[in-house]
Image: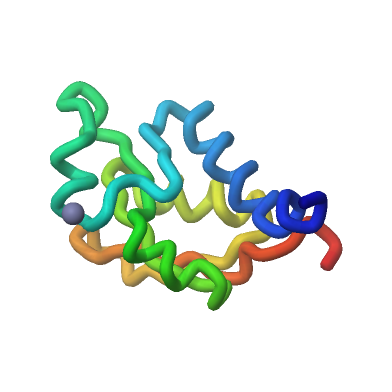
Length: 107
Ligand SMILES: [Zn+2]
C-alpha cells in the first residue's frame, strides 16, 4: 500500500498544484474525451487538465496524454516543477503528453 501511494506521488502533487493555480484538474476523470468535456462545469471550461479512464489504461507505461484548456505553457511548467516531462507542439488543439511521472522524487 505504501509503495502504491508513493508510485504516483509526483503526479498527485502536480494535479494538486494545478488546482491551486485555478485549474479544474481531475485524474481518472470519466471514460473518454467526450464524456469528460461534457462533465466539466461550464464556468470551469477555461482552465482544465484531466486524463480519462482510457488514457489511464496507459498510466503504467509512464506516459499518457492529458486533455486540457487554458495556458499550455503554464500547464507544462507546473508538471516540470514536479519533474514530470511533457511533450507538446504548442498547438492549443493538441493534447499534451506527460512522461516519467512514476515514483517519488529522487528515483
Ligand atoms: Zn465516454
